[in-house]
Length: 129
Image (cartoon, rainbow, N blue to C red):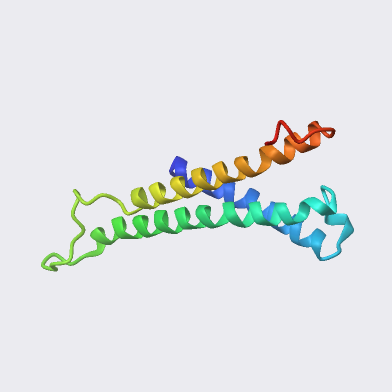
């Protein structure tokens, strides 16, 4: 198994657990609540926003794997053969995924820092301004 596929599988499993815990707690199953009820909406959003790129990376890796094996099964005189110089499609998908996660993480950080400062400095809003 390729290292990026392994990381995507581990990330997808972790995001699925995070998502299921948040949905279970929002559904009223008190035994499923790891955190407070107020944090479950955030857990669901983070779970979905991280699970979708992991699934996209896994699907493109699977498509590249199927495509590379297809060259072994083509007939000798068949014209449709995958060239060895053609770059894999997952490289472009990794670029899109990394841009999405970087931009999403940057926006979440810009949103979270003022809230954190409001929690730390209760008497004044000056640090978060």
